Image (tube, rainbow, N blue to C red; front, side):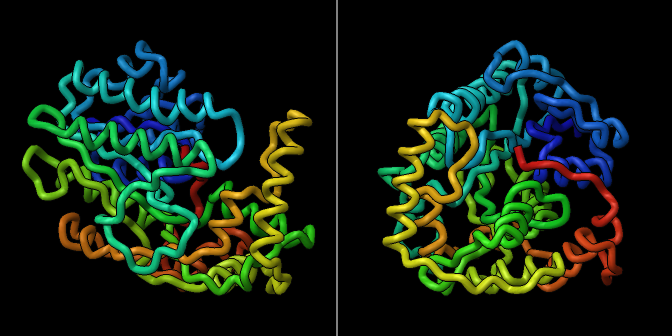
Length: 346
C-alpha cells in the first residue's frame, strides 16, 4: 500500500519508514526539514507545516493509510507551539485523511497522557486520562489522542499507540541527554533511581506501528482503541540509565537527589527560564522530577492480544546494538540496524 508517515525523518519515524520500505510498501513522508536518508530509500517527501491544511492535503492525497508520528516533544516551550503541532496538526491530518478517503490511521501517542505524578505499576488501558498536566506536551498529546480515537468510524479506522521511552541507535534525545549529563557530572537519580520503568527499543516500537497498520479496519478489535507499547521488561531507572552509560563506555552514575529538592529546583528553574526568556529546556522541571521519581510501567497484554505484538529485540540485545552504534565495536545480530542514519522521533 501507499503510506504517509508524518515525521518520517525523525528517530521513530525513520525506523517505521525503513520497515515499510523493506516489506515493499510505497512511502511518502511529511517533514519540516530535508532528510537525505529518505532520498536514499526512495521516499517521496512533502515539506511543510503539519498544521497547514494545504500541506497536509498534498501529503495525504493518493495514500491508502497514514502513520502519524510527527509531534512537538519535550517538556519546555510556549504552550501555543505544542497546541499548533500536536492538536491542530492532528486535526489537519484527520481532515485531510477524510477528504482523501484514507481508510486507516495509526497515531503515535504517549503514556504521559495518563501520568498523574503518582506511581503506575502494571496498569492497563483502563487507566483514565490525567485531569491535570504539568507541561503542555502531555496535555496536547492527550487531546490529540482523543481526537484520533473519536474519529474512528466506518470510513476511517483509527488506532493509537503509546510507546514508552523509545531508545536505540540514532536516538537524538534520551540517550544523548543521559550521556551529556553524565560527562558534565550533572546526572542525578531522584529517590535513588529505584522506580521501575518501561522502555521500548526503537525497532520494536516501529514494528508495533506496522502491526497496528495491518490490523486496524472498521470493526477490528483495535479500531478506536489505544495501546501501551514497551519491552515488557520493567527495570529500575538507575539500571537502565547505567546500562546506557556502559554502552557508551562511561562509568555508572551514583549521585542522588531527594524528590522535594528536585521538584523545588524544577519549579525555580522554570520561573527563571521564563523570566530570562531562555528557549532551551531547563535541566530540571516539575514534570521531569515526577517522571524520574515515580514508577511507570504498563501491562501490554492488550497489544499482545489484539496486535500480535511481541518485542523481537530484548533489552540486552538492544543495548549491545547501542554499544556498537556508540563505540563502533562489534555486536551480535542486528547488522541492518547499525549502519543507518536516524534522527529524532518527530
